[in-house]
Every structure is written in structure tokens, then in C-alpha cells.
Image (cartoon, rainbow, N blue to C red; front, side, top):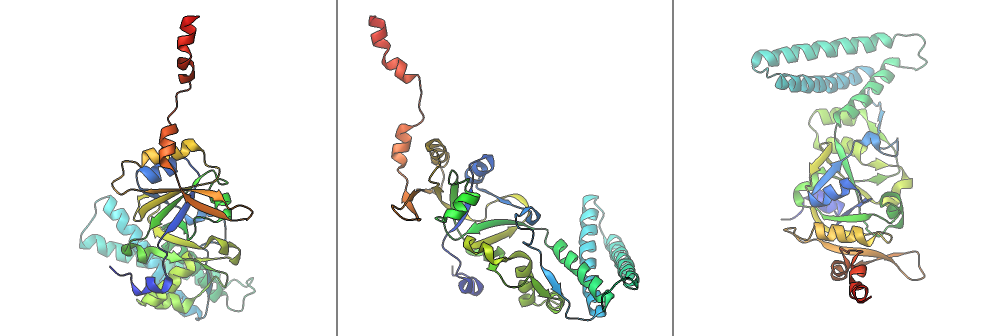
Length: 320
């Protein structure tokens, strides 16, 4: 099956890589074929997933956008609560609609009241406040988790920062076509601004505008992070079954032989075989090279029994 037109334009790589230290979560990720979708609020860059709104509309238009965003959120929250307590039917839906509308009207009225505070030094306090609240609502809409992936398996900085200083591993995945819509390529540098008019168009069903808002929230980072060449897979937060195809495991230069053995053995019975590689230095250069791992040598060397050496000398001891 061919990739979508959008994916062709983005040139999705044949492989994307996840750098990991070797720990329990990494073993779960490999053996149980899982992925951990992290809360963006835990990311090491506080500006990451933090768009700013460009208020290119007047206060009344901004108020309308905020009303629609808030009503959608409150209705979704109340429907989830009703489902939990097994309330359903037309009466319940009518109650949700009336209650959400009342809450929205109250909050909009409070914002308009606060905008009359003479201490505000803004030219249009209402416009400023509505813009601030729209930013907050946009972030609330994205209660999703993110799996950060890289285009390369041989980046020394990524090995140092995310691969436990070269003692960890790098997991390579191929990307099924059905994942394209949940995959975002990071844009580095530029502005964190998203126009209020674009948000309004998104609410009116404009798919291009929706993609622009998604990109502003999910796929923009400072230019200093450009070396990561990052892609992001978006999905429900926490541990999920992997929608990607595990293809290879690359071991860091300092990864221990026992870790290599444990992973090779753990994946040996997998229905779809995994390829194994190890990183080595390129002589005389600040470059890493990737080479096929000799799994036969590993399996011949491990597991060991340290007391075997004493057993080998047992006949001599018996003679004495």
C-alpha cells in the first residue's frame, strides 16, 4: 500500500529510532512490544509543546472561540462522567448541554468583568485575557502522550543524552502506513505563534487549519535541538501496545556483553525476527559506525558458571 500524499511530502524515513537506557521499561518495550507515550509536561525543554496565540481577531471573536473550546471540553468531561455512573438517554444529554452552556456563560462573563479592571495597562484588556484563556484551552485539548523518535541511530549526542552515555540501546522501527496521521516531524526554530483566526477555522472544520494548530502544539522546538532530527508519534498517554514494527536493536559502544546477550535471547523466539547491530568507533574520526552483531559468539560465551573452573581442576585435587 502506498503512503498518503502528506507522508510522501514529509518523506517519512524507512526507520525511526528510540534511544534508551537499559532498564525494566526498556525490556518491557522490547519483549512485550510496548511503547511509553510520555506526558509533554515532563519534557526537558519548558518551551516544548507551548504555543503562543497571535490575537489577530477582536475581543468578541476571541470570546466566541473561547466559548466553543470550553463548551467542547466541558461536554466531553460531563459525558465521560455520565458514562462512568451509567447515566444515559436524552434527558442526560439535555442536562449536559444546559449545564455546559451555563458554565461557559458564567466564565465568559467573569472574564469580561475582570477586563474592566483599571489596573490593566493593555490597550484592550478583554482581547488580552481572552487570548490567554484560549492558549490554556488549546493545551487542555491535547491530553495526549508523545513517543520521541530520531532519524539516525549513529548520532553521538543522542547516544550520550538518551542512550545512557553509550551504555544503552537504540531501537529501530519501521512505520506502517496507518500510523502516518499520528506522526509529526519536528520543525526547528521560527515562531511558537498560532493565529487565532486559524483556531477559528479549525473549529469550523478546516482540516488544513487543524493540522497547523496540531503542528504548533506538537511539533515545534527551538533551533538548538535541530541535531535530534526528531519525529513524534502521538497517542494515549502511558504504556500502549506499539503501533510500529520492531525491526532492529543497536547496542551502544559501552553496552555490556551481558545486556546484549539478555536482549538477544529475550527476542530469539519472536515471530518476526529482529536484527542486531553494535556501534563502534571509526578509526581516527569523530564518527560512529554500525556493524552487525555476532550473536553466535555471544550465545557461545553466555551464560557462564564461574565454578566451572574449579570443577576443571577437580581430578588433580582428587589425586592429591
